[in-house]
Length: 160
Image (cartoon, rainbow, N blue to C red):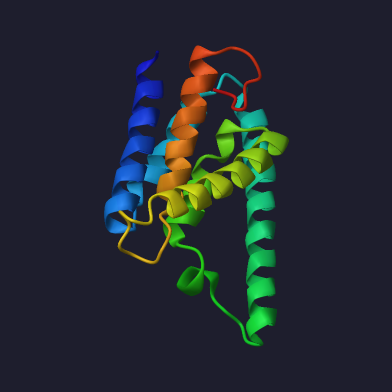
């Protein structure tokens, strides 16, 4: 395993630990994940930039619909970063966008949300806060997926 790959996995582990413990992540971690992803993915950089653009657009559209839905439901504009979603979550999902083709990014996004829900319910005896460490649980899920993709060659989800 290359050094950049190991650093990527360590960054994901740090995201999980920080989000679990403090319910926030340091801005350097998503930035490092994003940069290292460009180093470990064996695709031409201009193609990878296109993949990042498509994945980011999907994510921002999804976030926009979430904001619209919650605002219409409460009959006033709700800032998703104050009520439902953390800035670290936004940065994390954009940071991991180079690791997936669009269809796999959508699958990862949905599965990571389900994983976070399952973890939140499964660990509610140990969790004292009412908030979900979404970036942390998603990082743990991605860490598992990357390890699976690295050691097992069938049905890869990532470009790793």
